[in-house]
Image 1 (cartoon, rainbow, N blue to C red):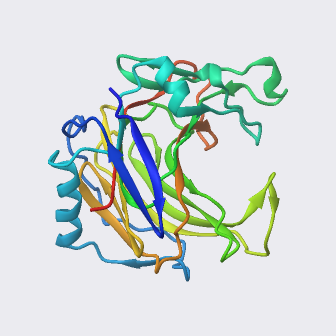
Image 2 (image 1 turned 90 degrees about the vertical axis):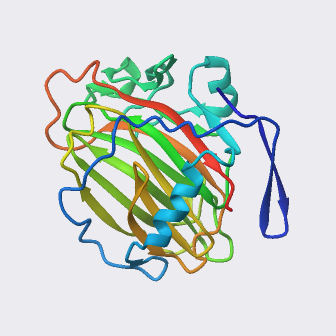
Image 3 (image 1 turned 90 degrees about the horizontal axis):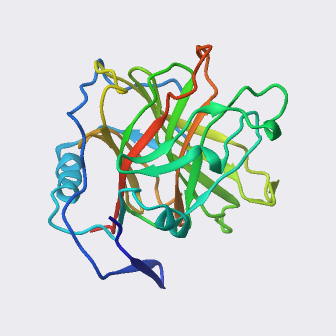
Length: 291
């Protein structure tokens, strides 16, 4: 299922016009439980200062998840023609090998397949994985995906967003909604990079990042879980299965429209000898305009 959405710029806001609507598409198999308080070693940055999660954050997230208002975009990744209309199937060779052939749609959703490396992947790369990027971009709102991570170590199961270059500050931002590692760890964060064109830096901004690590009691590969972020002009609140786990004050630093990306990559220690067939699956994604 997909909602056809059109976006129009109006001063500093985005106006969304929706022609089809439906209820919440969330389909988590159960709420994940934190093993301990969320923490991580990277410090606050001028563009991102942590604050405590509040009951108001929880209420705001639940209002989007309630189904009372339709998303401006939603898909269950069940149609290959819609996939190619709405998403770019990515290739890269930056120490890994992600190829369009590793991207598959089905009744179960989007599957980012782990396969033996193609001949063009490079001599030292044994495995290939998948990555997609939305053709549309969005500024502010609530973004949530229902995902099942691969059941192997070494895999980065990622749902993330990249803003466009921000000319006024010479930077762009990567919003790491979730970078999940088997069996029970999720890295959440915000990274600043120099603005780039053709992979060449356009400013002297230095790459920095801030964020959190969330450890869960649950084996996150055993079922589907919802991962999301509420992004406002001044703050971000990150949630898992509807429960806010981290919040950051951005102070209008992150203001460029952002695309959505899903990717898998074998980049961490512990990769098994035979990872083929251990895949990341995205059942659905939904985007809500900021209320």
